[in-house]
Structures are given as C-alpha cells and as structure tokens.
Image (cartoon, rainbow, N blue to C red; front, top):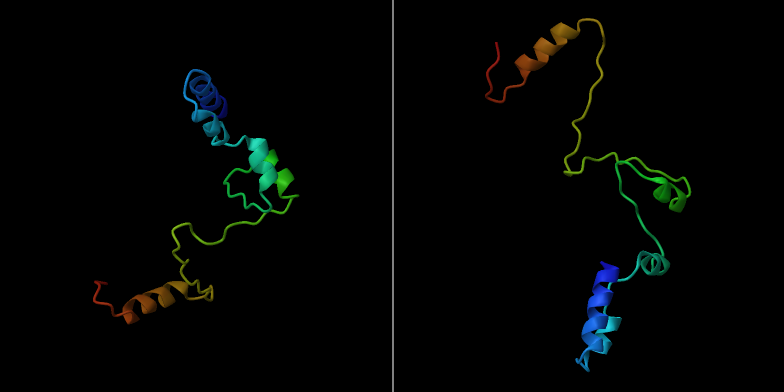
Length: 101
C-alpha cells in the first residue's frame, strides 16, 4: 500500500497539479515509522509470533475472560460419595418452571 500510494501521488504531482506536492506528505506510514512512534503496545493474538515474543520480552498473559464478556458459571465441587443422589436433589429443588422427572 505504501509504495503504490506513493507512486500514484508522485505521478500526479509531477504532471501538472501544482497543489498536489503537499499531498505527498499525506501518506501511509511505513511499518518502521509506525514502530518508532509507539511507546506501548498490547499484542493480542491466539498464535503469537517471534516478533510479539521479542517485543513483549517474554511476558505473556493468558486471557481468562471470554471474548463475549460472559462470565463463566460458578463451579461447586461436591463430595464424590452420593453424587448422583445430590444431583437428583439439586434438580428437584430448583423450581424454575422447567420440567423434570
């Protein structure tokens, strides 16, 4: 994009549009220019590359929340003994207007 846009503007400015040379300043930045201007960056990737690892200096954080913003349900760990009876009891005590056997 950078080279294509630059060549187009050079040709237009070279062949007759006197005000257009100022448009040469209005161009997309190269990656190196952009990289020199940023002070901090957060890289979000499911598969980070070597570039992200080098820039983050090995500091990697796992995203724990779901991207939809939904919270994970609360988990209760019960006793292993009588777990089927406990499950049936939980189903029967939850009266939300839903069917159960």
